[in-house]
Image (cartoon, rainbow, N blue to C red; front, side):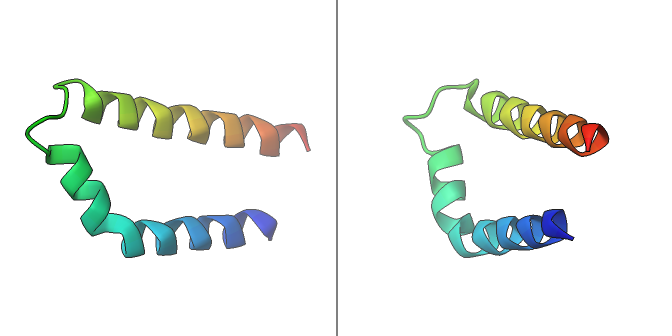
Length: 56
């Protein structure tokens, strides 16, 4: 049940901060690889959380 609350808070935070995130993501001064780094971090966190729940 704890993971569901964490996911809910994560979705709520993304919704609240989405304008700031999108401005940072597509800004003209940003590097071309920035979106790939963000997605790699999301995938890494998902893998880490999945391994953590399988151990328990």
